[in-house]
Length: 313
Image (cartoon, rainbow, N blue to C red; front, side, top):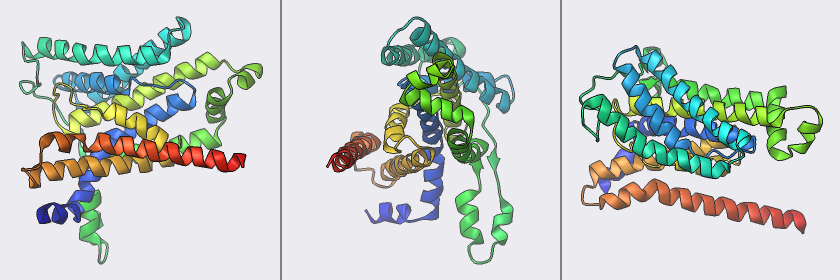
């Protein structure tokens, strides 16, 4: 137990939290965009899985940035596919999302088997590339806390820094730009923007495409930095956790950042327990992020109902 506490209260643990929260944050931002448009994207898990495999397979033959773009394209294409079935064919968005998740689970194993010549578990036989890390040696020059800042902030991937910038970029888009106002209006009360001549279905289509692009980046981060390579079902429920983070973050970019940070803490904690307390049951360790998700959603729901009751009083 002392080993676990020693590891948790360290700069290394905080750096691990940032690393673990990055794919969650990117997927949460994607889920937030589609949710605000009124099209809940429950396919984040499947999109992330397919994008992760796409990134790995493309990076075998092309530079890392091409692989990241390919992952984004794969996610966007899945978002466009969801938009086609939901907006054109009038299929239920939840059912379409679950269909994508099911196809992703089996399809990635099949594609991995074809790419590796029969291996259905990992891409260990493929030499894939990684997203470069951003080293910040100048932080060591900060008086007093230079070494701490360097160990905390240096060595993270380019996508990590992009994710943090995207939080504030998305906030600016949603609350300072006309397009963001349209997006929120379509999600809140679609009849009003429709009366003003705004094409509701077009806004939702682009929201799903953007959601897929962010989720594609989450898959690329997972398979090209957190782990270099693809493993069967490697997303391990992160897409569903990201859905919970959207609600827990009160459907706001800053709230999404804080929710992703919370889940990142418990994700990193599960790694620490697995390595420092090996007698602890592995199943319980793997369940930690999901238990936290359920507890957080219960607390969020209780708080929302209490606030609603106070407003009605």
